[in-house]
Length: 211
Picture 1 (spheres, rainbow, N blue to C red):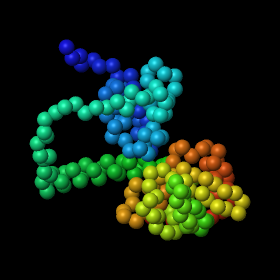
Picture 2: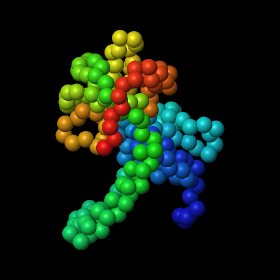
Picture 3: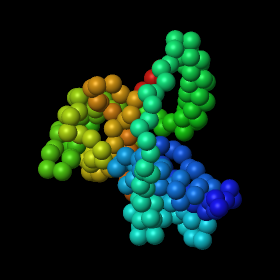
């Protein structure tokens, strides 16, 4: 007999999307992991109530979380169509949600500085050279549109007269067809971030005006 009291000893942390879910069953974890992009899987973590610390999803202890298999089911009916009236209601809810998220992001947002610094963007054997328009501890805006082969995780090499900085980055999500901005991934070492922060403080670049 199926029990409603399913054990929920798992938690998942996705730093790329800035969410953490706890009190999950194995099945729920498998569904979450199956819905992640490759980039999200690379940086996400799992925790079990019997563990003393979080573990990357790449660890052997987390391999069962990749075991999702869709159960057999009949053909689904056509998805319901959203009427104009329904769309208005959904839009209203979505606007409220975005407003809350935006307030949270503003509190954590890094100061962006106007600075033209040569960079190289490396993806496998491909290298693209450009310059920054502005930069912060959290990411970069580039002078030139990024090629289509820049996707997933890639390396941004910042070439300054004093030091070379190397970051692991991914494309900022809120962009249209042309891509100019990248965000620094959580996998970039704390040492690199600290050294870059100290370098920014010495340069006294003008801050980008708030919009």
